[in-house]
Amino acid sequence: MPYYLIREYQKIYRADNNDLAPENLTLPAAAFDFLQDLKDTLTGKEIFRSSRVKGTEFLQAGGYTGVIETPDGTVLEILPKIYFAEAENAAEEVTKVRRIVLKMLRSLPDAPYRQLGEAYLRAAHLTLAEVFISAFIESVLLLVQGGLQQDYTLREANEPYLRGKLIFHKHLQANLPASDKFYTESDSFQRDIPHNRLLKTAIDFLLPRTDSYQNRNKLRQLQTVFAAVPRSVNIPTDFQYADTQNRLYAGYRFALGWARIFLADGSLAPAPGRVRGIALLFDLARLFERCTAEQFALFAENFEVITQDRSRVLLESGGEKTLFGLQPDIVLRSEEEVIILDTKWKIIDREKLDFGIARADLYQIFSYAKIYENDGRKVSVGLIYPQNPQFTESVSALKFVDRARTVLHIFSRDLAEDAATEIKNFLRLRAK
Image 1 (cartoon, helix red, strand yellow):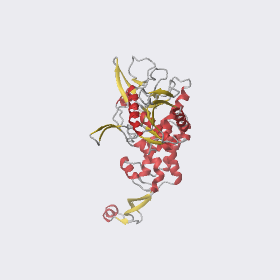
Image 2 (tube, rainbow, N blue to C red; image 1 turned 120 degrees about the horizontal axis):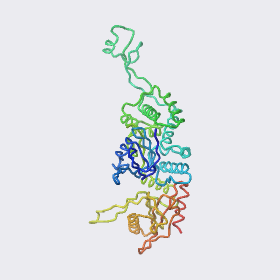
Image 3 (cartoon, rainbow, N blue to C red; image 1 turned 180 degrees about the vertical axis):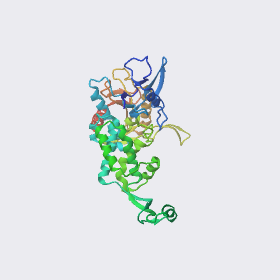
């Protein structure tokens, strides 16, 4: 399958355009058209923004990372904008950024991505799709080692022995010429249950889509294990049934979680995997926010950590009526101080006079400071950005020109580093 590695916000052109410079990335027309129609099922936003300059149409990747397989077999892997293709060692840069994406995915709640441990981080030389397929395979193999669940299924059959209940009218229809068989209805204890059907469907779906010899070999082994299990003929219904089962099926949690991602409309999958391809995409701003908030909750010692705090409003009207609720990403509270933090998935530049910070982001964080001053505690605020070659060190020497001289921290998050160390470094920085 044709494979392309692109960066967040990179431009893509049609391959049938003959007026393009050789360095421009071009895709087959069928793949280009598919990407043009791809939308996020949660927000309705287009994944790729379509534009035209001087008559030349192009697509620009939005703020997502992940992997897409188009109906014609073209595979696109999108890496975050913190990936720089012109790095001295491009292969190492790609592996590093994939590892960062996998670390951020582990912060997603109620998803199998939490299963992505150190072994998968070390496998970041593989594409994201191959890493996800590997994780699915390992979860199914673990399940197989413990034994697949079976259940009683009602079945009808015309057999040479009497078992269960004789269905008399069908017995007469089938066996009137010969009386050596019995048409019966009986309970059969077998693996043909929704959970196993979904896993079998996912295994068959992924086999032609992996380029890894190891993954392909393991998927073939799993096909043998699931040989007696039919594919699911109604994926939504089987998932609905599997979701209502008891703790006997707890071992299926991760395997079915991965199967859902590949086969169904997951909350973070803008296109259903079952439509002749895979579309596993993740909103980077939301991913960065969740990852950072979870890590502050784990490692910000001596602080109460509140994420998405909705306790404050900007305006009051008529006593009890409130308008414009505030919702900072992270609030750190101790007896003496309050620190309000907002994450921004943006590239800023320390060499610029204003660091390239959006004016709207400053207005927003300043409004948080003014409202939280009513606590009677010392208040400071911070903007957290992903580290990039133009912004490698945090800044803490900034103050708003207000009566309280509120301190603004600009935190450079090195997502490749240990999270506990990063959080401690920030708290040490704010104390200076």
